[in-house]
Length: 194
Image (cartoon, rainbow, N blue to C red; front, side, top):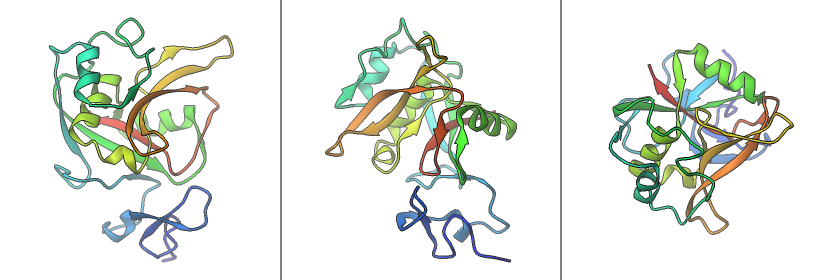
């Protein structure tokens, strides 16, 4: 059996340009079988090896859910008029953070997530995750592909994501995304177990 393509056998994940390594431990060190191309990102306080339990409160407004996250900045376009008014999943929800080893388009990422039996996390699940596990977004941006705002006439949409500003403070941004937009191995996607 050859070296893991994700870490070259070092145990540390390569950065998205393919040289140097991050401080993230590779899943091949934890897996008992061959590494899969979709991996669950490491994080604190996992409820199981692969999932995180969050509570999506059905009685909150979107503004309350954003405020509970304590973000230093939230894109002002992320409001109830532009996002789903109610969560698709309410109550206790199991969330996974997925990333992929190869360059992929938005369309390919969505197909891979859905074909593995997951749902795309919506803004409500994303905010619940950010509130309960605030430190993870300091390592990687966390993208929410289950909620979007209509974009421009060029088939682009605005998707929310959790990230940090230039000094490491937690933020909630929007990113222009097309079905053909490129995603690299350092991107992380929130998914919900069915």
